[in-house]
Length: 239
Image 1 (cartoon, helix red, strand yellow):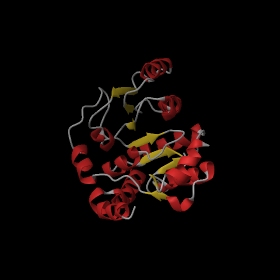
Image 2 (spheres, one colour):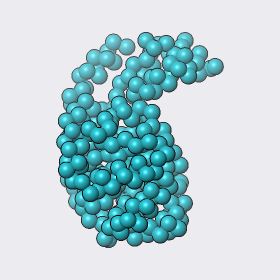
Image 3 (cartoon, rainbow, N blue to C red):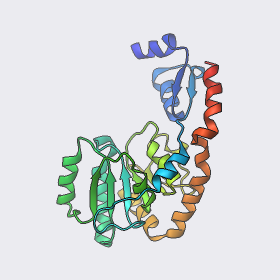
């Protein structure tokens, strides 16, 4: 009740980073729709592209262009255990499958144990947090995101800028960033077979990877800092 009061009476305007969050505020907190502005985060795409070209040191046995990457905080909401179970099935079919996970978090030790328990110590690698994760993205055949919920997952846009196709679960709001089959792949939240098949498609079909990557590259301008800064300044000047 206090939150609803604040949104509707104390706040003149409310800024959100996505349309889906706006819809949640209207539905769950009964915020007046006209009070809410959707202003997407901006990205320095040229800087990301430059950083992505830096040399990357991959774990032993992992080759450029032949591994799946996942980037994010090692926490429960990111559902890395779910990804590992799906990846185990992929490895059973093809021992060459590799997964590199970039990030730190309180679930790290649990993930290490799961990797050992699933027999994936030669296929899955936790490389820790990186100040520059972009070379890991750029040199992967795809990026996987298996979260249950997200606000605005920057990693999707960053992967698109790096030219790496994304396969993601269908959390609320993802369709604002990914158009399934056009600039990335979206799979159902708890359908392991769907995720498995989507990853396999990207691994074995370079033509699909190229198509998705090219389409994604065409769309990143909408998040580009230099292109959209003036538009954002105009919006804030009217608040």
